[in-house]
Image (cartoon, rainbow, N blue to C red; front, top):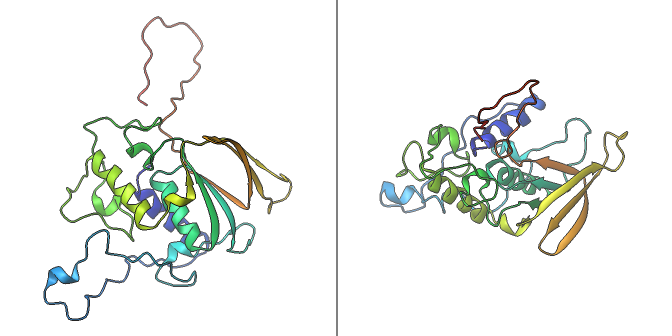
Length: 239
C-alpha cells in the first residue's frame, strides 16, 4: 500500500461524517526577513513542524478522527498492525487525535512493502511507483522537488523512514513483532474493546485496546484458488 492510501483514508473519514475536506493545506509562509525564494521553501525535513495541533484544528481534517459507529470519545487506546505507508499514517493521525497508540510490524524497519529487505516485501530492484508524487506523497509531508515524478523503490523506503522520524513514530512501534490474534472482548457489544496478542523479541505479550487498525498489506501472501481437476504444469502467482 502506498502512502497515497493515507489520502484515501482522509477522504473516507471526511465522508463518514459528511464533513468538507480541504483540498490543499495552507501554504507555509516565508520566514520573517527571508531574502529570496529559497529561504521560503524549506526542505522536506523542515517543511512541517513536529508539533501536534489541537484535534479541532480545521486545517488538519485527517486528525479529526471520530469512531462514527459507536460515538466513542476521541481519547483512548489503539493498536495498529503494520508500519508501511498506511500503518504509519494511521499511527500518526491517531496520536494527533489523542490516542495512546501501539504499532506492530514483522520487519526490523518501517516501510512495509517498500522496505525491500523486509520479510513481506514483494518489491524488486527496478521497481518504481506507478503513481506520481502528488498522488503518492502524504499531504502534510511532501516529497523533495528534485525527486523524479515516479520515485524509485529506494526513494520510497527512504521517504517512509523520514516520515516516521519526522513525526517521532518509531518509539510507538514494536518491530520484529508478529500479531497472532485480535479478538473482541465482547462480540455482542458494538463498543467492545479488543485483545491483541503479539509475539516479539521479548516473548508473547497481550494488550487490550479500544480500537484496532489492520494495515498489514494485501500483496505479500499469495491466495491460490482451489480449482477442481488435474493440471500437470507449473503454477505461479504474481505475488
